[in-house]
Image 1 (cartoon, rainbow, N blue to C red):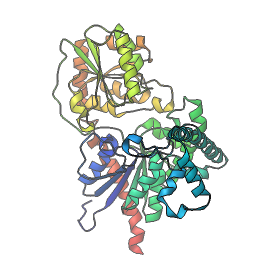
Image 2 (image 1 turned 120 degrees about the horizontal axis):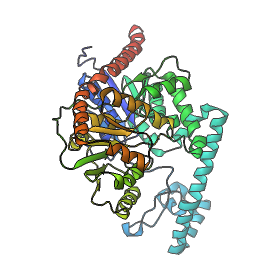
Image 3 (image 1 turned 135 degrees about the horizontal axis):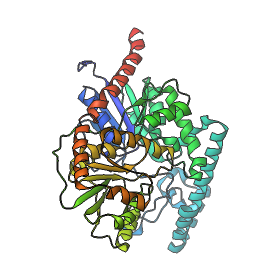
Image 4 (image 1 turned 180 degrees about the vertical axis):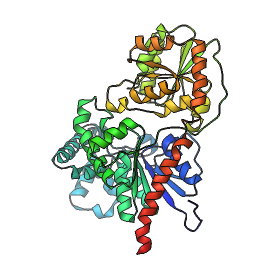
Length: 468
């Protein structure tokens, strides 16, 4: 539909991520911007990639209710004050006199070591105990009735409210919530502005950490309640794999299955590059626990000598240090490289320098079983042979296009068997197949369905207003 400047539609994207680095949200914005819509996105700071052509707003605050209070250091000129401490009363004349004034004077008389101890007790003991008690109360209320989940959500993290306040300044024709963490924000904005909202889930949220008992007992009830109520009011619900669509349909008894929009990158034409003397294997993505990286490293001693592995992506410093130590202790420093992340927009181009794309994901939850991640399609777009876990969504596409080999179990031995099953001729064949498959496994093949669904919902919502 052609849109004039006077009637240009506007979409608001919300995601609890750094949006320039979030491939799925960035593609959403590119899609609507390219079709003539105004786009504004609300997310978190800290992006590595350059900004898109449309507006991205982010919260600069680092305050988080589930963290300990932030103290000023004496070296920075502060006096070690903590929010809510008696010393803070100096800033508020309304607190002069009475018990607070007495408390303030008593605080000032304390020697510095006593103040530091008080700060430690509040930040490391009292605050965590208070937070856990409040969290337990919130979860208990959700077990009684899921209507309590919304109130629990807003107490989970200060940034939820910060993103809401930032987004509240924007007027749009539809809000698109990316993942359950953005759902209550989009619902609230939509209700206040009298516009519809849509929901796109990048994960199977209710099963993401289902292999952890504590998570199932304390997190899943809140997530399920937020997602179920949110989907009920969403004009479009979409997800990343057919398995997730089927699971949501059954779990929430939805009248129809969510729209399938897979995690495919924009099409890029890359030249065929046959294997050289050394065969370079790549894992790219988040570097953290639960992604089979330890098993991959442990398997390398069993790989044929021509293979080398690069692990590239962002991750917690302590985890990266643990992987580096694991590599050194195994004597694999000359065969494994821990590389820094590259901007999201350069992922495919940088991946094209390699030969095999590796993803050995354990299938310990429905989330993992139904996974169909960005990296599967990025490896394919880059023209790599694939070596991935034998999970239904990935294995179906791999077999359909003859893209590589499957890993039946995430153990060092099974990974090594899969890698050693490649010879150079097989890798080259799979690489050619990947370049051919990339012509159909791309964002341009998926985008029209998302755009059509959102546009139809906006126009349907606007029709009654036009009549009125």
